[in-house]
Length: 103
Image (cartoon, rainbow, N blue to C red; front, side):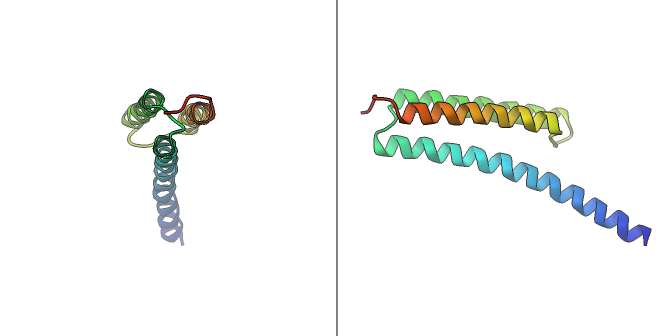
């Protein structure tokens, strides 16, 4: 019985790490899609798109650094920091897409 419990616990931990990486990467992908869509429709200027993509790149680099320092995983505090930065980036993308500048 203990072997089954240990195996189930190990599987849950491995899957939670995979889900964690997937959700962070999915969010980054969605943000990039929003930037691309804004450029395609003309709601984002080239300069705004570059600025927003640069911000996404900095978030990606921060995530990589956090994972490297923590054995490839993110703890709850690190996830919260990344989510906060993605929330701010999302608001910036929204504001850029909904201002009066178009090309």
